[in-house]
Image (cartoon, rainbow over all chains, first blue to last red; front, side, top):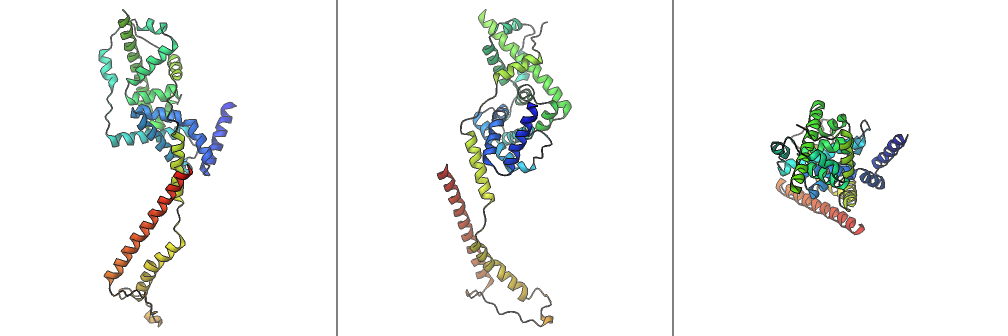
Length: 196
Length: 128
């Protein structure tokens, strides 16, 4: 029931934005800016660029809001714009994002005390390690993990946002998760060794 | 060989605890300003005097040339309609002069258009 009400409220807001209501557009920005910015940041690796990308995406969404027919969720539509805007900006800047995780994998040890160490860590510390580990992954890994785990997008929605094939998303998600855990393991392992 | 592992549920909880990144405080304002500006630009209408000048300088002579020109036969002579004796009365003795006048008029209109856009922009800054 709550979900239905939220959806109905969002439909009303979108209808108002389509009619040119700036206050409604402001509400829409407030609702999605954090996720749009986070997604842009995962790709751009720079707060200024990410902010510009997210702002451009919102502006594009506003200009083309009449094309949004409600066949998919508004968030999915918006994040598709964010993703494509970021990719276009990256192409323009010719930034070559290297997949650090591949290099990292070679360095990882097969066994460590990281599992035990993980459970000893406080919540705040764990969160810090997750952030560090996530930052060490490639942009694509970060995007798929952010969308799936953080924003709880379905595999199908991730396909819509990124334009990847369904099988590709599944494989990428599986590998990204594995890489994240390995990087996390290595970070914890280093921590344990430094204490010894 | 023991692998470090976390369940999907644990991973989701951890990432959600980490939360989302927040943009700067001016994020909304910048978007709203740009959106308003884009609306104004889209709604920009050419003033009536601009249209009159355009009609006088471009459309009327073109229509005149089409009707009276040598290259185009509309069969008007068969209808026995006398071509109107029109003159712009700006002492245009050649095509070169006429094109020059058109160029100047175009530049002039472009400058006026630019001025109007600048005034809109300044108005927006003052309001904000």
